[in-house]
Image (cartoon, rainbow, N blue to C red; front, side, top):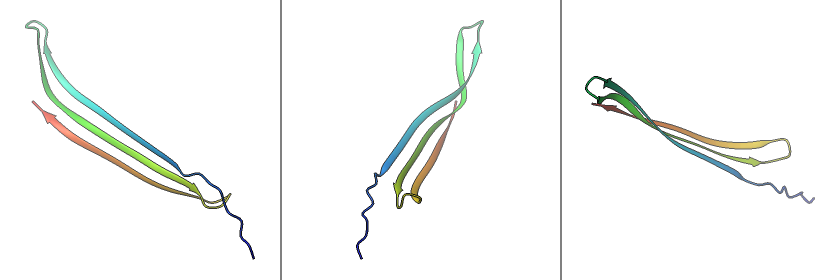
Length: 72
């Protein structure tokens, strides 16, 4: 009995993002801008896909979100 070798590619995807949210109070009469609050957000999303058979796929994924608050 001989088996058929499945030739499949491993597909890896990684997404990394950084976002900075800042709330600002502005005094137009004095020309002053004061940051009052905000958040730095780092997001990491990754996945790996592999075909075990023509009809069965294996997917491994990892999602992480880190929020770091800011204050004045």
